[in-house]
Length: 553
Image (cartoon, rainbow, N blue to C red; front, side, top):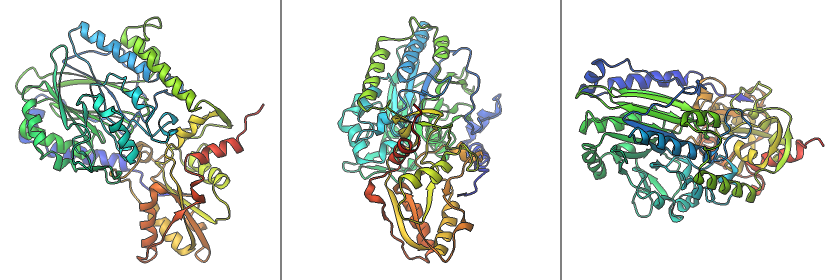
């Protein structure tokens, strides 16, 4: 096995974005930022487990954020300190709302997208997310936006629309640049105006990054173009009477597109407070763009409950002062922060949600023990680590569950494996958490070794493209734990004179076929389905665990 090299991406991206953000600010905002404001800072791209806050202080603006939950509604069974599930978050938010109300403050709950693809609750059904959308509808979100994972399959999009999920939010499902490919209308609304019970007025927008590999049911308009549409003018008119503009963005907390959006807002409303609630890149991040604009991103897989509170400017040119916290999904911590106990933490609504989730899990047999893992395996550790899930995958899982007579060279993007396997019992749902996508395996047979060498070199040199990447745990890459692409053999071990079969998953086809064509002097190399789809990228794990890891009696 071999990996491409991309070690310094995180620091380089952070430095470039920080420079572009400061240099690109409108003149008034540069002046405002320099008048008594603290130096601009941003969290590093690492999912640090900082100490939980001792308390949550309510100010003029109070927001709770979830993002990139990816159907982890049952929480984390295997990890200490992460015992909270979706119903617990619901109860937590309900109690926080009550606490804030006692102080005459509003508290709003937002979701920045990617509700599907991640566990069996979403992916053990024919239509991804079909059984969990009614659960998510129970959560008291103020507004939501869509992630890229909602847009990979026509039937997923159709379920969101036709099941009533989008309509359920009464105009608060916000997709300013995602359109129905047939009608041309936005899937949700481009923006909405929120009036809190205690006087807070918000204008809320919703955007997705410029996704290129979406399904045929939708089109995704570049953010720059969406900002030129009439709805944005209307939203900015409403912002004149609002306390703040909230921008739900399914993109990195410091993505250049956040600056594009902020620049357009500043062009019309140079002093309005702006809070970006970001996602997609699966880490805890925070940035201050100018004296009245901040951005927060709150992890992934229900591992983080983001909280941000802001004191509005006291003077015409004064700054907005914000505090943010990352709350671990730990029930005792949530009880402490919400002023509750075991006796009164559960609510009627959270109890119903808990029962509904349990019913789905039983119906899909997700808690069935299918084998026992001899140790922990992680997708982010280096390939020379005994706990490397990628080494396990390429050296043991694929040879036992997939290959027959092939002389294989497997190549793959490391976003395909998404979570750990832990020592001890392996349940059916664990195989979905590791690899939820059910991609078909593809093969190009009888390739000359010299061609394979060149193609693998090209593939391993590929960098992360945020417009097409399926999962973006970029801190794994940026911190050198794992690289964007891997191969099952070293280039040196490929004999130029022998023939090989190159294997990959369907999602990676554009990258692999492009590399093969380039290595073949511009002549296309065709791939075909392997084993007629009997094995896919999810069920090879189930097959392997059942066959190779029986539990000791």
